[in-house]
Amino acid sequence: MNNCWNCGRATDTNQGGAALFCPACQALQPPPSNYYELFGIPVRLALSTDDLQKRFYELSRALHPDRFGRKSERERQYSLEASSVLNDAWRTLRNPVARAEYVLRQHGFDIGEQRSNNVPPELLEEVFELNMALEEVRGGDDSARPQLEQARANFGGMLGEVDKKLEDLFREWDATQDREKLAAIRALLNRRKYIQNLVSEVDALLVPAA
Image (cartoon, rainbow, N blue to C red; front, side):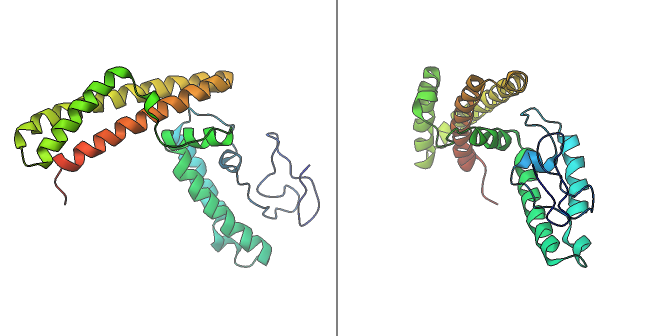
C-alpha cells in the first residue's frame, strides 16, 4: 500500500499504483518512474497519440514547477522530478518504435544491435548489390546513382511493410500479453533498424548536405 508522505492517507489507485496527488491533502507525491503509470494508462503498444498528447498537456500544467513555488521544498523537488520524467515519457510513448523498445526492456528483453540472423535471405542479395553501388558512387561513378535511387525506393517500401506488421503485432500483444508476441516484435524491430540503416546510408549519398 502507498501512503501519502504528508498526511499518511492511502494514495493507491484502481490501477494498483500511487496517485500523483494525495486524494486527502492534495500533496504532490513522488513521481513514478514507469512511463505508463505516470500517464495513468494501462500498458499497451497500440496507443492513441491524440489521447496521449491530451494527457501530456494536462500533466504538464498540473506538474509544472511554477505551480509549486510556494509549496514545501519536498513538493518543489517532486515537481522537478515529475516534469523531467514526463518529458522523457512523452518522447518515448509517442513514437511507436521507442514505445515498443521501452515495453520490451520492461519485460526483460535486451535491445541491442541488429543481428544478421534476423535479416531475410532474400534481402542479402539486395544488400550486396547496394553496397556495390554505394562504392561506385563514392568512387565518383555517378552511373550507379539510378540504382541507388531504386534501392532507396525498395527499402522504403520494406519499411512500410515492417511498420504495418508491427501495428498488427502491437494489437495482438495488447489482446494476449503473450511473451512470444514480444519476441516477434523484437525480431521485427531489429529488422526495421537494419533496413533503416540502409536507407540512411543511401540518403547520405543521394541527399546533398545543407
